[in-house]
Amino acid sequence: MSTAEAAEASMAAARDKYRSFLHDEAEKIQWRHGKPPTYDTVNQLFEEGRTKEWPKGSLEETVQNAIKSWEMELTHKTRLQDVKSINPDKFKLIVN
Image (cartoon, rainbow, N blue to C red):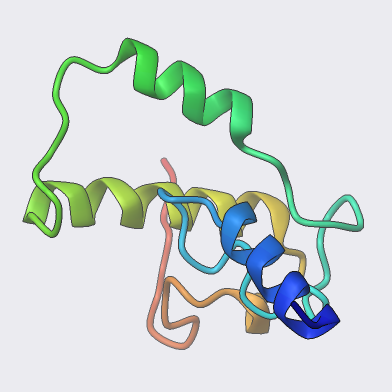
């Protein structure tokens, strides 16, 4: 296995199954703490405590993963141009 193949296999293993965009172009993104967050413990607690596992590709699973991705991006990415889960030109968040 070449070095490039080993690096690609390592990235595939590191991917988060609930959060899109966590490792996509991670080296180009400005992260709040200098690197992408690790959700291994959070994912384990989520899997142990959940009462329903949605079917693969279902609307429920899509919404669950979209919310987790959105929260991760808004919490850990410092530049709005790095956020992929929303359209920053059209998104508005209003808090009362």
